[in-house]
Image 1 (cartoon, rainbow, N blue to C red):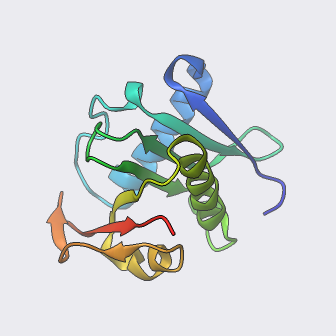
Image 2 (tube, rainbow, N blue to C red):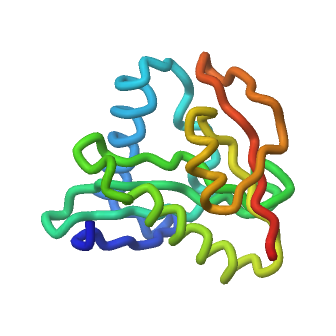
Length: 152
């Protein structure tokens, strides 16, 4: 998908339409599609950087958030990676993760990167340099695993 443009936003740069779009995408996938009732709005978004991938028509197709060190865990963390169902299978999740890893290297050079990912995506995250640091566990009824990417 070469027609998707990624852009980083800090909390105060998010306009109402972009904020609505990212909250809707997260809810549509994490709550409705995955049938998981959980508190998506967890109070951390104002402290995060937000990566949005829009197509040329302005549709939000990919999203993730970057949590600075100390916000959730001691390391910088990547969370809420989501790809719109219509855009899956084209490498958009990998592109978003690479954008996030570049941002981590730029903002937090030399620091490891943490994520808590759905366990079925462990191989995907491993292909980006993440290694498991926990056994699988249930979070909101979905198997997750903590992973860490150490800086080379």
